[in-house]
Image: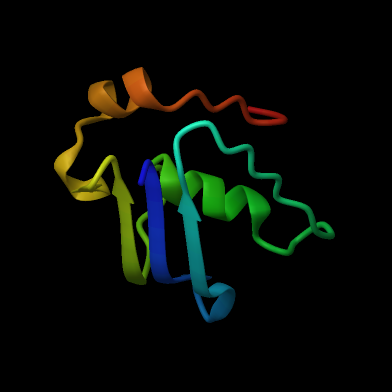
Length: 85
């Protein structure tokens, strides 16, 4: 498994944006996130890139907890280009 997310929750203050998100991606898979503005797509990507820390749940990349990676190591694994800076 390349990416595994389990029971991920995230809130901006009291506004819960991500609730019990579960996702598994294997090498070579293409995953598309779609949804209306404010549905949490960018927040999820920021959690995966470790820009935001989830309130609950876990994210593993290549079988290791996201917390075990440095920013530099993540940059070598993940390419992320936000819509705006």
